[in-house]
Length: 475
Image 1: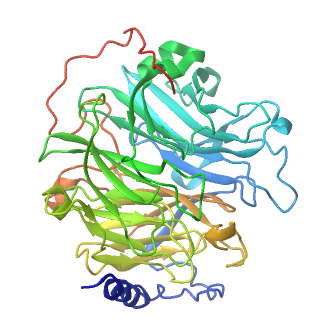
Image 2 (image 1 turned 30 degrees about the vertical axis):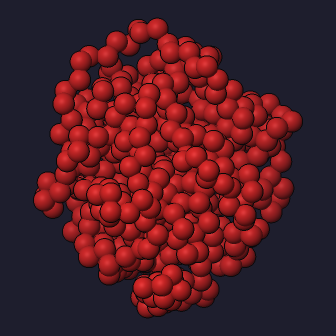
């Protein structure tokens, strides 16, 4: 099949995926049709209005019912300069009465410009719980090289005990995204990207030990393949945008799935000092760069997003690349979209379901049991504003609505962050939790087992919390 024929086939596949019932394209949903009958609102918390909410993260232990939400510094109709940016902590102890119990905001907000707080993550190490926040501020003001702040949140719900434990600085441009992972070595790791150059890997114990010099906790870098160039539509984008890290029981490898300039890249990072490229997805028609990239529990099929209007989520089969049959994969085997005129954003895979923060289309769920023929199974439109009126320059006019999504595996609670309408929690009929074994799959997802490590990995030797920090040559 020629590339032109493959492109036509993909377009036909996308156009054949109709909006979910009740969704009227750029028209608001009919009364009573804002969501499908199998999706139920558990909680809704407003967090400040127009373009104020960024990504979110939820703890997996039922005994710690906390969600963390980034409050960003996007421009608003009233003028965004000086709007305080930070992180809110929401308690879900009584899920139907969710509420903010703690808010942190950056000092001197009037001097800070840029996106601000973008992405919270939580980690656990040696019995202590940590919250991290990724930040991006523009040059010319304070904290232009602040990547992340780390707080100790072990004693929640007592918010008086929350304390800043460390800062990762010296990162030009800050961190646009981050990801927390329990490595097979036993280390609790934080990955970060500035959109330029490699992804950075930090050992959270060493970061906290170093305090204000948290960057001394750097233990690895994940490069892009040599020769990778910035896409024309985003000239400064020379690194990774986002990533997922997971263990592969079949190969006994820790694997990094990075979305970045020109496509998507899979590395073996079992040895953090020597990342090894396994395969890649490049040269895909209509994909100048990768945005979000998530595998299924087997690591064979991946869901990939590129962030500009009219783009579907594409599904790729990595087997030809992992088996060495091809150097790089360039053709998807399936695609899904909530509405072809819009764009889906971040997503979480709990096979066979994929939970999607679909920007102006709100929260959606599709089934990828047959990766060549995914289909919608539920939705709720979290965004009440007008569609097609939210410009992000050359990337399109659809940047509002549902930004982030996470799933609590223990009970199936689904949480969404919406740019404008804030925090949402949902339940879906028939989805009361997720364990891969129930589906005949490895029990692998973005949810980490902080106590025992990745399933199937050999038990590591105990890692000292007081080891001397690794000092990087240069960030």
